[in-house]
Length: 270
Image 1: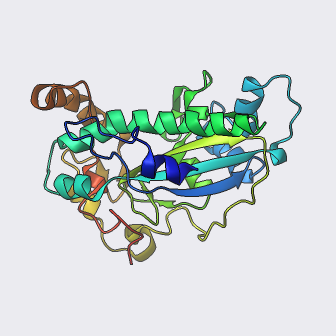
Image 2: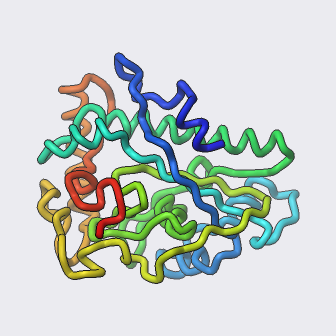
């Protein structure tokens, strides 16, 4: 259902002159609402981080449900080949396609989230979108700095869809140049296998002590061998609003240079 929406729906558009596709074919994974990882996230990131059962019971206060009865559906939306090729050439600012994917592509992602919920409800299955819930919020983790009450990347990790890289991006079978989304539903789907044992397993820097190419891709030095400096990163991203408005003529932003022209751009690197 998710793949069909992205592959065939006219909603999958960058909203440019040619209505170019925002995303290539997704990959999808599943995790249990009772997965211990969700409790670990709350403990590790902060008490503000919410579990699947908390989002679900807020949306359906009169429905009796246990965490084990919930499935978290997670997906990866890969950037298109053309968007990635153009973005590789940049060294400071986002291309128009990349900025459009960040704004209008996320609109597509939200429409997909709502579509999944509506189709499930047609079958009598209650579901909720954490990213669109009034419980979703930005916070500050004592350990990690900027953080939110639900992370799509951490959810995708739980669903076996990828591990984290030096720049904090999620390296998936279709690469790191992507966005992700999720829905929590009261239904049983067998959890996907997590084909890794470490949260940095797919990153060549952490697993093999090599690569680190994303360090030089960052225009403001926000990535180093010590990891990702979220404050420096955010400060640069904030400057791209003016650039996008002046050169591309719409309200938007973006960076993502560390997601392209790197070995993990479009695959798990070997």
